[in-house]
Each structure stands twice: as structure tokens, then as C-alpha cells.
Image 1 (cartoon, rainbow, N blue to C red):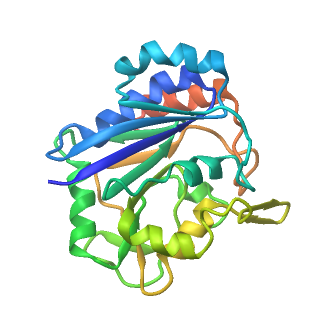
Image 2: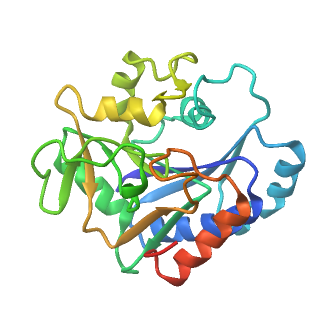
Length: 258
């Protein structure tokens, strides 16, 4: 039996969090034979927002709330780099990160996501990351195969995105350190050039004989509850009302349409 840390990134979309987080936890952990903890990471949230969250943590299914109050000593690049860089943990063998605007829905209620994750890592020592995000046709850079299947139904792919990443922390962390993942000036956001945590994670996962697993046959649908500003952009609307409408459409369609 393994131990997992599930960490959800949050800033200020409280109404959306009430819809997405309980569904994500239920889809990822019920049922499971493994132990786990759920951490909600409030990055640069206001004091009022955090105060409203505290009495609701039990209902949301959260074991621990982490709050970083300011952008003092912030990581360069996209704001999400602070979630990853400040809160990546090696205290658990397996870490699963996702965002407050991630829709996660299981189409087979008996499927044990955590067990399936652990088994891929255990059977394949070259796998450092697992990603399963279904709306990859919207990404700014396409999902692509970088070799033969890791095992039947599990592709070896070129990248991950923030919406859902599973780490074998012992395999990922040493290489990430060497590549500057925890240096606060590593990442870049310029028009025409982006280098964010997910780019660095992709570098870790596709170099030195390491691989990123994409289990496309899992009965799990994962999508970003937002719309792109324009086709091919890496940026969403960041409008909570739009995200809520996307979530409701995804819920009605069981993760097929937003």
C-alpha cells in the first residue's frame, strides 16, 4: 500500500472550488486501497478568502490548507509556477497535483485511480510522470508520442499540463533540482516564448531515458473548466462565471463537452 499527496492549486475562485474539488477528490480516491492526504494550496489569496475557506475545509474534503499570503520572493513566469515551486513535496512517494478549474470525472465508479497510478510507476522504473488530460487538442503545443507504448494502452508522450500531473517524487525531484526547478528566476513569460513549470517537467520526463506516461484507456475524463482566449493560446479566460458554465456542461455531458 502506497501513500499519496493530492494537492490542489487555488487562488480566488471560491464558487468554482465548491464544485470542482469534491468531485476531483471523489473521482481520484473512491474507492482506493491506498492512503492519501488532500492539501489545498491558497497562493496569494486574500485574508478574507482564506477566512471563508477555513470552516468549509471538512466539507470540501481537505486535510490541510497552505496559504502563501504575498508574492514576496515569487517565482518568475506564470503565477502557477509558485504553486509548483513552493509546494512540491518529497515527503510522499507519489504526488498528484491539479488545479481548482480541473474537471475530473470517473466513468467506472469501481476504478481505483491511485492504484492504477502506483502500478504504472512500479512496473516502469523509467516513468517519472503520469498525465491524463483529455482536451489536449486545445493546448498551445500538441500532445505527441515520443516512442513506443510504455505498456498496452499507455502512451509515452512529450509533455504535461497543470490540470493533472502525477509524480514519482523520488525520480522527479533530483533531476528537477539540477534543471533549476526551484530557482526563482528559471521561468519565463514573454510574448512568443514561454518556459514554465510544465515545460521543465516535460524536460525532466523526456530526457535521460525517462518517460511520461499517458494512460488513454483509463475510465477517467479530465478537462480544463475554461475556454481559451483564442485557439492555440495557452491562456484561458480566467473568468469564474465562464469556468462555472464549462463545469456544468462537462458535468451534464460526463466530461465530453464544455
